[in-house]
Image (cartoon, rainbow, N blue to C red; front, side):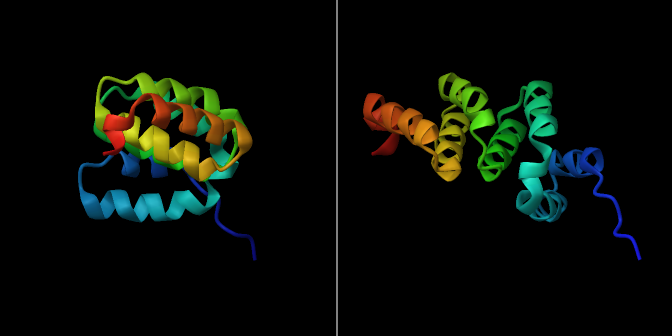
Length: 116
């Protein structure tokens, strides 16, 4: 018996939902396998301007645990919305690599008021 194919596009569509239950279900499906979808998640980050959706995508990028996403997540530390910056910081910590932790540490040291 073959396993059903994971539909990343459908899952990302549900993650963008404003309905909390729809979002949480999709997020719970995608987060454990996020590392399999780095290109799709990076592309999704480029597709959305609203802070709510960007935060969700950034959090998922953290769950990839991939240094490939560090430059994109690092750029989000300059976002005008503090919530997006917080998600970017936490994503870098979640990646938990030397490069991601260096970026997160430097950001925290340079912006202590955001961590008070």
